[in-house]
Image: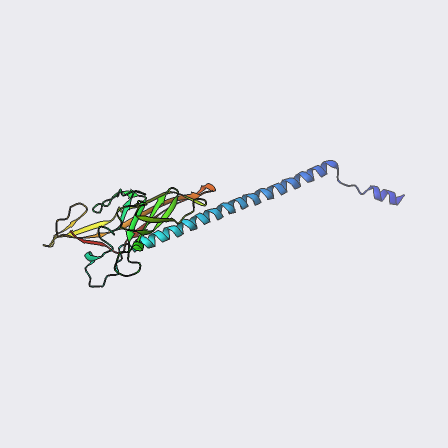
Length: 247
């Protein structure tokens, strides 16, 4: 009799208690899953953003380093810079509308922006502008292209140049790229020692001018599979080799 009474005193959970316990468990699991999914989504977005940042940073570094070399002619230390074959009317750095010979910012101006830049330097150090010494960058559609061959720097058209894509629009959409010579300086000097701003004053015959080029690059891009992941960057490039001319 005593044994039966002891067994009856061991009561279990009621139905209400079980329902409450299950509900609390579900709520706890749901909260954990919510934070897990949120963190996973945030980490994935961060990873995609990092990928885009890395791609654009690499592209910008490539453009900056190459543009900085513009006009390098491997001249001897005592050579007259005005005789540099990589900085004359055919080889000087210039910016154009992509796919055309419409120049933005003439050789004696420092304003305007364009989507293509062309330049030359003595890559093989032979003092002669060869076809593979002409370089450039341009935005064509949603891809950035690099010029690997050319005949002169009088335009960005396809006829006299060979361009290759260096970005892939299936992964990255580049929707804006511009080059500007704003901030460049041009100093002229006459035979009698008078100096002047050769952007503001047209040089006369025999005047010597020295143009210091500052190129501003602006780029904007986003991921092809997620347009919300976007980046914009700006860099300024001081071209190491001044454009020296005798008019």
